[in-house]
Amino acid sequence: MKSPSTKLLFLGLAVVTFQHGCSQAGSRSADDVVVERETEIVHEDCDVESDSSERLDANGDGKADVTIVRIGNRELCRALDLNFDGIADSWIYLEDNGLHMRRRERDYDRDGRIDEIALFKNGELVEKRLATLMTNRLDTWEYYAKGRLARTERDSDGDRLVDQWWEYRQPGCPMIHADANRDGRPDPEISVDYCRETGYVPPERTDGQRVGPTFEQSKAGSSTGSASAAPSASAAAPAAPAAPAPPAAPSASPAATPPVKGKTP
Image 1 (tube, helix red, strand yellow):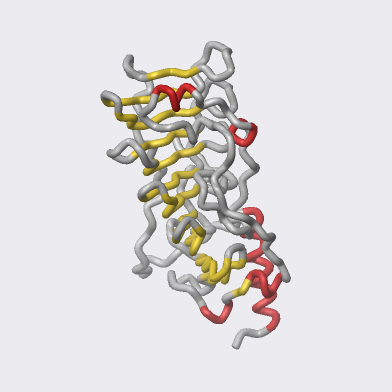
Image 2 (image 1 turned 90 degrees about the horizontal axis):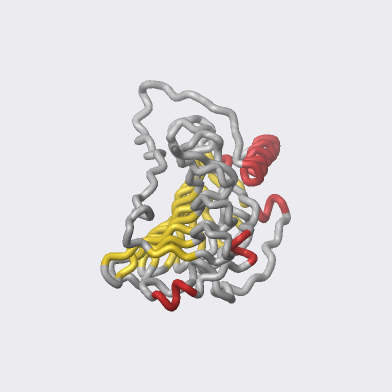
């Protein structure tokens, strides 16, 4: 049974990580047998420079805000400039049938480097890979079930080894486990029930798709649908990031839960 002092200490550390996504770097012994995570952020190619790509100017400034790449009539991917600065900050890749999204990459802080990679199956979100530390590397992995965040694994000190595990037994209320003795495994004696310990109560939310036309919601593989890709207010100004996951019920819609900060060349 953990002592009150140990429990409070870990809770404080968990809350700080929950809000800021920061922690001190550490080292591991050469005897560690825990497998390191792949942390490199790889941008999937989308040939927006192709002569056959379709370029749409939604705000009439003479710059392409949406660039769509196709093979024949089938859309492969599209690059989006959501804040109209002339630089793509979101990329969408479709499944072979050209109907469902299979991958989405986003640059939230507009520095030209990807902060989040979201993976989909049959159009449903199943995983997010996030860069929330200022290391240009992945450090957080979120896993979804039926569109809802189910669990999160996090490398809080940037050593490529997971040291935090977040289980969402109910939306917005994670059970947090950590590796304090640095053996690469959760230490059950310092697990924390976030909502029980902090008294936090998640707000009531109704899941659903975003309403109104956006770059990402325009119909793939259709010139008519693509041309209607006028940006919504939410698309032009995404919400501020938070890491590793906000304490609220996630939506099953394509809207992302943005991370704090991360970079990749």
